[in-house]
Image (cartoon, rainbow, N blue to C red; front, top):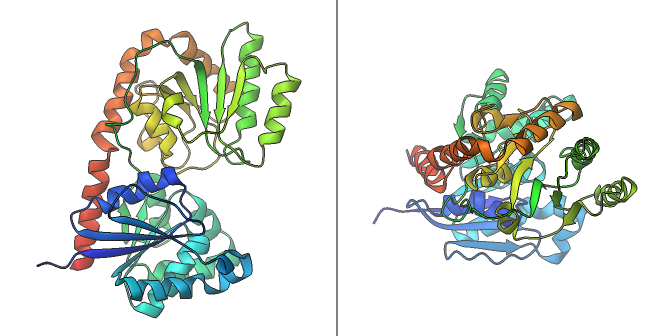
Length: 353
């Protein structure tokens, strides 16, 4: 019987990211088992995936950095893993690198967004990142733009392997919507929810009776809520923490993003699959998916341009049915689970030789 792969993953993946990234990997017929090392416990409803929580002492920052790679290497040998995958560079790429050196197992570095590229341009981190990436058998990238930037830096062992979603779960739902605009993501300086709120405030000043829902959490949450109150928008803007994002996708019309950097955001893929109109910036690899005016709108990441395309999507929502249908069709044809499974199959076959 042909030996299958047991994959060991270093990552800080949220539960939703386990679905986007690990489940398609586990669905490969070449994979027998996937172990994911995490700081905290997580139950996964998949018999081939097991999340392993770090011992409490290793959750302390100093011990985490000093000993997690060694603990991971011990687990790799104990579990009989024969390939290592790390998502993002610090600390997980470093942990995968060290564990690969200790165990001799092939190491795949998976780039989620532009974070590693940003570190790479910093001379302080450049030396360490080169060490890690030179050890990697393959580097997976979310899209063409990220791949191009890595090739410029001399890396050619690249495999396009972006996040995908289950299009049988994320479906359009024809009904009266709760919200006109929706934001999903962390409340931080990269995602910039405050800019979305500023744009929405301008839209309300135009006399447009629209509503907005923020789903997420983060360091800017308090500030965001204060701005909502200050601008007398509490009646029109909701801030929600929930794991049931699907419920809000089905009950919203337009997804809005204003990130400074991204890979291919899963919230955008889910929204397009549910036939929301997406108003997003062409950062990272977003333009690989969204064609302006065809299956969504691209803005230039200024408040004025965000307002322009939010208003366009709001006023013409009913007449943009074809755009919404094309958005879903884009996801079905290029960003559903089956494509990620096929990608992992090809990559693992290369490793097998």
